[in-house]
Image (spheres, rainbow, N blue to C red):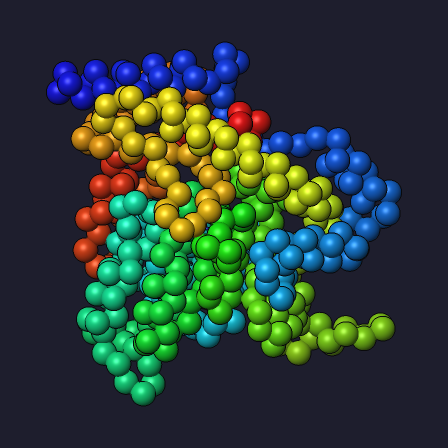
Length: 388
Ligand SMILES: *Cc1c(COP(=O)(O)O)cnc(C)c1O
């Protein structure tokens, strides 16, 4: 006990010593400068602040180019992007969607918003993403028929797999896609946190049939609030655009809508902010990488702690830096959170596992041993690009 107390104290002291003296230090603050101000002013002057205007298209092209995808459709937030992407992948009421238990609540909420339910699987201890072995276990336990793959206890169809690139570190996406392909199940990538993250030369979010990114205020690039759907499939892209703009048939003056649809398009004013932010992404990425190296150096000689690092063969965006208390438990984690937050250094735990939230209490799940361990021992550190 006294040993782990000492270790936690040393971690806290190390953190306090390496960060700039100003307090408070937020977990993640956006970097907003002159370019953002000028671009926003230009958007306001144009009079086009809502769902019509040139910035939406410019933002979509900037993201599509960065990610190496053919099509990008900007929407109001990452959750709505994932909801639409799931619907387009063919997920419907009563289905099950395989998601990691260790994720932000939006991953499972989007599943519920299309009338389906989450099926929770375990995580990898190093990359924090969906465990391919756990995915295989879930699919091997199911029944395959010509109509699809069905979970045995509930008899519900498993209609999609949603891996997530946790804190900006790439999941083992190639293995995950290969496993899902074998069962004929589409992959929808939750790349909400991984703009700028690559596996070899390929950007995360474009391995699955569809992918999404979030531009919430705390993500690496922000539009205030926003999200984007990406795909290489032109038919899915056209459908995403149609369904997020009230399914209105193009016409000079008539209001003819051909199905029930959403009003999820990103407003022009948010896209203007996004255009300015995208121009700075290379700078954000290099500053975040520099900060990650500083954390790794600072903790190199501290016992009982490991900095979460980019998996081999991948390039992380280092959106949120995190440490793992190697020998510690949840009490040590909470003590570290208390000491650092009392010192006005905003640290945060990982999310509570989604499998433990009341609305998902009855959801099917595999063994979640690694996810529980990660939940108990991981602490996220201040990661604003301005610190790098
Ligand atoms: C941020 C985030 C989302 C989407 O969030 P919005 O706030 O709706 O933009 C989805 N999944 C994960 C893992 C996220 O971190």
